[in-house]
Length: 326
Image (cartoon, rainbow, N blue to C red; front, top):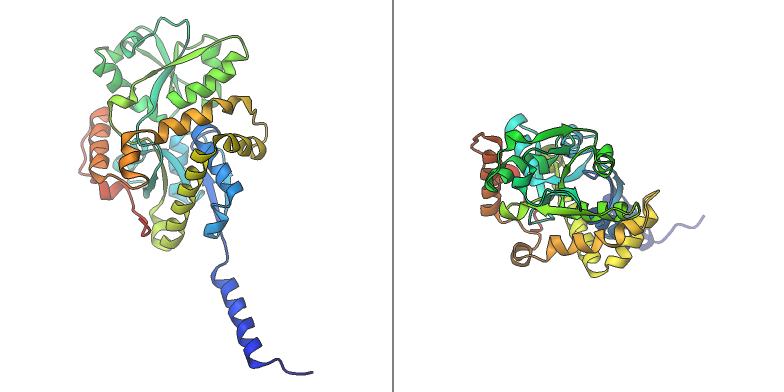
């Protein structure tokens, strides 16, 4: 057998080495809740190659609420997730959860009450004497008492009903609860469902009064220590996904419909464009993009302390991690 030329052998070795060095990372990405609205961007990012371009094989799974998302990432059951920054702050302050936020997605809080259109509840103060439904760990519920207080109401006179997240929409539509602690973006999606039954849902926004961050992608301290390069690449993939989704909401709706079993396209037609507009058409994003405003993170910590009635010595650097690329 004729020996291969040395140059060919060297070239083959380089190819093999490159294949080993740049093997794609398998990443488990758990959402904070069911897919839809703002999270539709991740599915379009998959379709556009935002993750594969960063040598990431991502598996996206639905979430089961903010508390579960924190638990899964803290334990390593999920590599990355997304939830309200206030939840992350609370988890670090109260249980020393080993997590850090890495990318701000929704810079202005969309926290709101969802109510049926014919409800007598017009403002947060009107919630007094009525019931509000929520799931365990719901970030909107965390700040609702403060919102009611700021509106001049007495939250102690509000009936709070805790139920499985999957049941909450039905409880509202069946008049078993008077309101739902939610977000303005989720309320738009819920209204699409309600309209099929001849009903209508409206929202009462209160998150804008708090001047805080909302949805933020986060990971574990262990992941940051073990593989900071992957953290930086995942952050880039997330940014790529949202840039693509903002540029083409219709294709984003198609992507989540195609990739999520049982997804009804009509539920996303209004929700996706509204979510993208709310998340990115604001002064905070226009000024900072996907980069943290650390003074605003410090303010976020103050608001969490006020809503919890507690104090801590946390600083922005204890809550967020800035990947090297930023």
